[in-house]
Amino acid sequence: MERRNFIQTASLGAMALSFPKLPAFLKDRPMGIVVHSYWSRWNSKADSKKYPAFTNAIQLLDHCHQLGAGGVQVIVNGWSTDFAKKVRDEREKYGLYLEGSIGLPKKAEDVLKFEQEVINAREAGAQVLRTVCSTGRRYETYHSPAAFEELKKTALASLQLAEPVLRKHKVKLGVENHKDWRAPDLVNLLKQVNSEWIGVTLDFGNSMALLEDPMEVVQTLAPYTFSTHVKDMAVEEYPNGFLLSEVPMGKGILDLPKMVELCKKHNPSGTFSLEMITRDPLEIPCLTNAYWETMGSVPGSDLARMLQTVRQHKYPGGLPRVTPLSTDEKLALEEENIVACINYSKAKLGLV
Image (cartoon, rainbow, N blue to C red; front, side, top):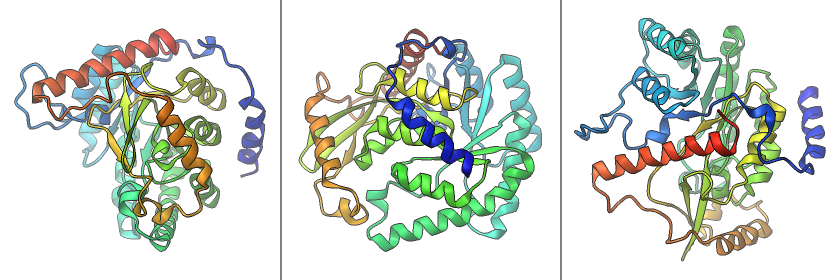
């Protein structure tokens, strides 16, 4: 862990740097697409001729290649060896990267299945996998300090079961800040695991739901980051707190060029993958007692700062909502948003 501690300490000096808008060393690395960007289209039951459902990784690779994306992050679950080889062939044909999204073993008898999924992902060309440690958002799933402490214990146990498999097959695993871990919680978890094979899948916007400043989250987690979920965020007041939405890049409040460059400085070989989920805004009920059941250590200044941010950044016309749309309209808007983000990443982030 000494190397990580050194990197993290060194990063403090980098925080004060003034970054250029288009870093030259970020060129020639196209942004990929996370499968969850296709919230409506992935395994859709809708009978849409214009936007047919994606039901497997090969279909997703084909489509993302057509959009000019650099790769995909896709769920690896139940793949056969033969299918993994077909995914590899398709990926190699297009010259795309592939990352897997995988579940953790909860007990010893789950390790065999976990290992087979790691093997299949590696066969397909994945060198990095993404995972989550919780079953849901912290403020919706855990209702006491004891419940959240139990999550910390089970997460550590799962990662300790996974680590020998990852080390054996030389595959890295990134734990996402999935509206569960605040950045210091996640760093502490990684220090307990103490493995070069386990790091972070850094989501640029999720931690706003836990009242964290998104740039501070990137500054804290970038030294540990293997992969990313890149997104832009918009906010809006509501009686119990605020609403939070992914919006097309450049229309939200995040400093994406600076975030991308900071990640790249710490991990020059890292990938940048779009997670643009087109859906109704999420409710962040930070003014309710229930929200604070596991957040007792969070200072009131974080709440005040977030509410000030919300009030200072009103989204023109209000946050977008998909509930009033027809199925085809939802699918069309989803595709439009993804294309807009890919175009922005090429024009403004140098990810081309």
